[in-house]
Image 1 (cartoon, one colour):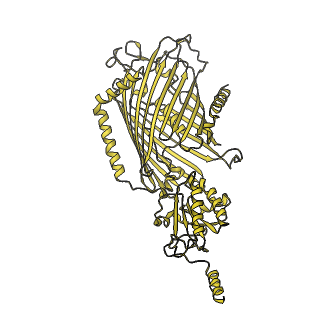
Image 2 (image 1 turned 135 degrees about the horizontal axis):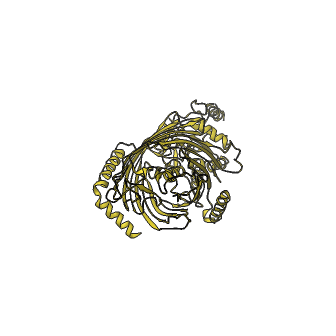
Length: 165
Length: 377
Length: 89
């Protein structure tokens, strides 16, 4: 009992579950809105990572639906992280403020990091399991994209995807 | 009256577009264009353009445009049909009487209706132009496809036009009749060169058959005044290229060149230089310079000894003579949604203002002003 | 219309020297341009999507200028063809 409490306390102090070494987010040089290294960590949640940019019209059209899906999945233990690849992060900051988004956001100026994940186009949404491993990748916009993301995220949530899965 | 006419046309267009199949996003563009040259000619053009997207699809659209040219030329004395009495701006040809009163300006209108229907890679266009002595029609078909992850765009376009010319006599009735047809084809290749550079190459071929002059123009020879006579066939070709490069100051530079040749042995060179700069967050300022130079048609002479001309052809059309021209000016494009507090009414609103100056080596010069607003729903 | 198109094609073939030279120059330029260019991924197109990088410009302005310029100068055309898209998915 005491050991379990100690482990839990260590996790809380440590700021969350460590990402698996093969997680797409491990090693990415993301920054926050102030340009400092992004320090957001998974709390052992299934994560949708939405990669977008203000200069991409289909990304701007898709964002509201993706944000609504993120709120829906939060109730089921998921989370949404938006990663803007604008060369000037302040463009992404302004756009998110304009559409009323106050959730998690990170920035990869010029897409220097996300390209290492083999991402060639946007919008792209990665579905990561509880240890940060990629379980699905949905590319593009339009009818059916959100439904597919919802189904994929729920499948990962229900499978309890984490270490060893 | 002309504003009423414009409103009626737009209302008709809106009624046509109200069908549910066209219930996508819509834009309306209104322009006012004024051309004034150093010979006292003024041409004011108003145009309305309505464009609507196909419902549920991002690749279908329809566009309709109505334009009205109002030409005003100062009356001057001169020999009927001579060059100095000709309106060279709008294809509005000008009947002139030797007894024309100096105190009256010559007024004329030209109506133009054109449109386009596009879906996927294909688009069709039509063009109609009406003035009291000239009716012009044209239809076109175009195919454009992006390839290589949108790094290149290939395009092919063809047009066919036919004109009906009925020059008017002093009493305003038609005194003759003639026709003209034209066929053209354009092939183009737009290529992304790197992350900040684009280019485009185009080849255009065209043929014009039939009447190709001005029905009111005469030519002075050493011994008499005779009607102008041009060849009834003309084969034209042009090759043009341009390159557009982005700079980190949120600006771009465009360089363009066109080579033109035809079988009237006119060869011309056109060079374009354009600089665009984003001011603040969204205002765009454009500086532009265009240089043009051409050789003359093989049958052009400053003076003809007799009515036989060159191979039977005579012209007093100065644009078939060797000449050069310069065009330069500025244009501002201003997003106006917040500036004019239009966000509650429109989804987009853009203002534009252009001022340019044009002058040629033949002592002709003109000032061009254009302004307009485009709104989106 | 069919007769006019046929005449046009016939004249083009007969005037092959005039057309062919421009066509050969054009073909060489296409090969040079496409050989010298890099493949830009959609995620790299930010600068190309800037409003100052629109290749087609303002079609209404271009059409009007073409109209009055052709009444003052002896040649026509040269206003380009299609341009590229945003490569958005």
